[in-house]
Image 1 (tube, rainbow, N blue to C red):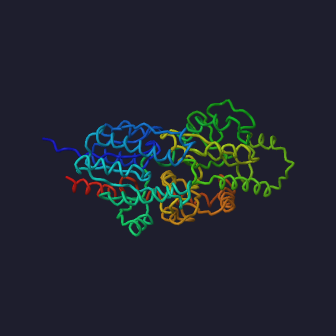
Image 2: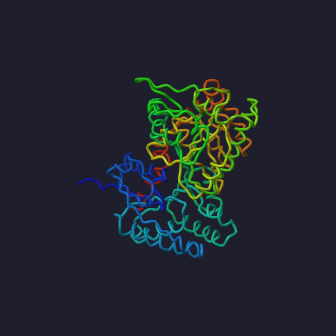
Image 3: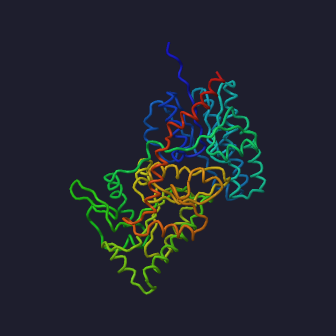
Length: 473
């Protein structure tokens, strides 16, 4: 008789394609621990192909609940009804649609109604299912960003999250600050399991970067409704020639006149203020113009043509590529289009899970505007950037120094002016004479090599999950 294989149900009340940490959990449980894994989540973005193709991982997609008409009448009533519907959908899936798991591993937030639904489902399985919460943040603080911390809905949400958070058999969390806060304020004992880069993220080989640049070239140089230094100038019909690189036969080389490529990813929500980045871009543009003694009468079209033809200046053009989906995307796109910039441009796009790591590994700098609703979590995007050997400029807040070592693998800023100063300093003399940027890139590579997801997971996450399963058997 073969020994029964353990089974874990990963629960995400959201788009599983936009929950990388939970996908990594699934892959580790399936490949390292040899467990069967059921992912119960909403659809939307495609998960990693490794998740889709793994025979031990089974994805169960729940229907998303949308009550747009009711939201226009009463937001509070809509939130209540939506939570009730989601509760019954979750219980139906967790008790009747999937085989009995040995443990539930739950992403928090969202807390409502996820934690109550999982607790009830565990009880309906006669209490034979362990319950582990992976605390990414606190849900009530996210809700408080849109409603205000004193709103009755936020207070009820906080009570709910605290009450059901304490009913879990065990917990993981993403920072030491969160571990201390949960213990001191809610009596929740959590083990710290820092996000770490997986094998998907690494510096991109030059030929792979060139291939990516070729695929993105049209979206960069011929975008809809954007008129700037990258959409104007000579039109290049050579498919092997891009803004950044060119190919002769089998040889690929980077252009010395290429722009600096800066990337960010976002869910376009209120916990990231992109006005800071837009203001910094305007300041960089004006300060470069002043440094080069350009006045307002300069012929921008001629300048753009010269730049397109390869003319170099001491400060480069900056191209910001911002990846992600979310509610505030269109609002910021309209603001970007109205900016009058000579040497800076923005492109927003959604990249497939397989292309996003290639972009990070091909870029020169990352930017994080995440400021944390609770001050207790760390942005996964920075972990991915470090995994790709990419340094970052990040908004400074209480626990960010657990990840970003200022002056070593990145820089911290508190204002748009400070970010603009950092851009000027890092890209002075780009691409060959920017020693400060190269030092940070070395620091990011050192951070990458210091640890990996698989080692950290086996050391800190797996023992917690396995102990819960062992106690429930």
